[in-house]
Image 1 (cartoon, rainbow, N blue to C red):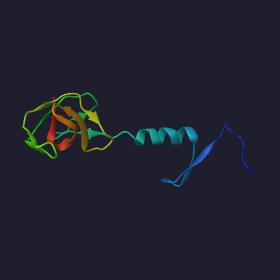
Image 2 (image 1 turned 120 degrees about the vertical axis):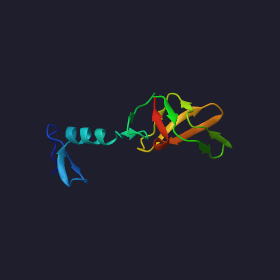
Image 3 (image 1 turned 60 degrees about the horizontal axis):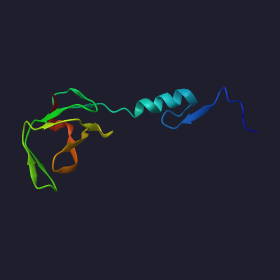
Image 4 (image 1 turned 180 degrees about the horizontal axis):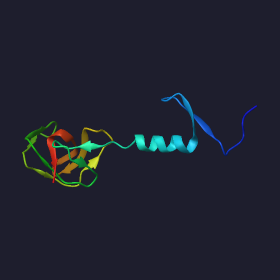
Length: 104
């Protein structure tokens, strides 16, 4: 017979091997999605930050090289701790490694 009491909904968490209250498990999963992205010198990056390149980067597929000191405005985080999504004139879908940029 199934338990129909909605006040104490428990969900099995496969990572911990425990039965957790639904609200606690939802909060745990929400915080897991947050990834901290750091630049070359350890500053935490956020959506909308401006960054500068710390070395010359050859952009594959674009036949172009972005020079050291180039300013990239309004970055977006991708959910990966090492990649940021950027816009730059003449290059579509530019993704840079966080280790090659410094926050302004």
